Structures are given as C-alpha cells and as structure tokens.
Amino acid sequence: GRTHRTVPARLRKALAIRDRGCAFPGCHRPPQHTQAHHVIHWEHGGNTSLDNTVLLCSRHHHYVHEGGWTITPHEGLTYNQPGYWQFHPPARPTRL
Image: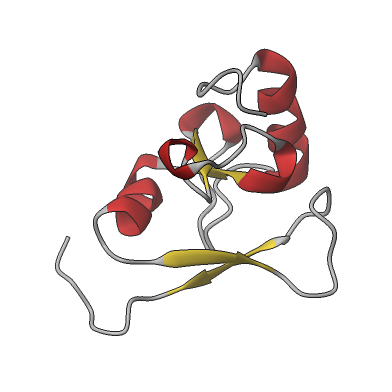
C-alpha cells in the first residue's frame, strides 16, 4: 500500500506475470525492459499494489508522464487479468 513507493520484488513478479511486459497496446518489450508505473501517483495517495500499478517501457512511461496519456481499468476485467488497463491518448496530441 502506502509503506513503500518503490515496487517490491513480489509485486514486480506479479506484474510481470499479469502484464507480460509493457502493457501499452502493440508494445512487445519484455518485463525486464519495463518500469512499474503507479496509475494513481504515489504522491497523490495511490497505493503500491497490483490494482494500481502497470508495467511500461521507458518510451510509453514518457507517454503517460509527459505526453498526457491516461490509464483506466478495463470494465469487466479484474486487476489480476492481462489487459486490465486501457490507455487513452491526450485530447490534443503532444510532441515527445
């Protein structure tokens, strides 16, 4: 939850099993080339938990942080299923 901002090894392993690498649609970067991203940022009260983290490669991590992309849960899936997260482009495209 809120004890640690960084993702512990057990959670990282669970993310690798669920996301199978970068979760951004069409990306095939393997888990070892990804970073864990808090969907609700830790600084804003988000938990370090399976239902609030997703694996992203560096490029797609920048899409979210600097490019304005948003991430929401996929209706009808539970947080432990692949494809749980949906990615939404910004209303106005930004250059990265």
